[in-house]
Length: 109
Image 1 (cartoon, one colour):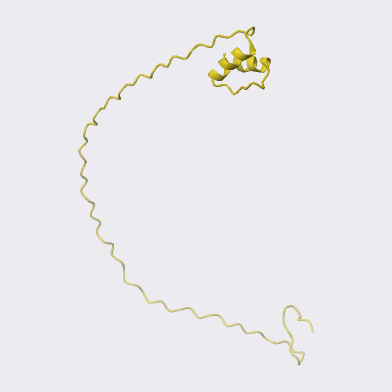
Image 2: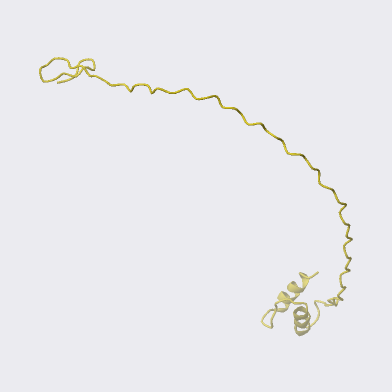
């Protein structure tokens, strides 16, 4: 059977009373008053400030490396252009065309 208005029925078809036990409040004994301890602030000692030692940096002048100027002309032979490009550190080989070697040399300018 269905409960009516939230009241469950027992087999005798009479409403059954639900008893709920609530916990009893605990008896709390009064605590003695807490006395805050006296706070003693430490004596502030200022540290001695020493003047920082000034160290002047050592000046090192860079070495001047003479870079040979690349003098080339598009009218030069492929072999001469190839040698100049390889001496300049470009990754060109004999399989590159003269136009490719000239283009690589132009990237250096």
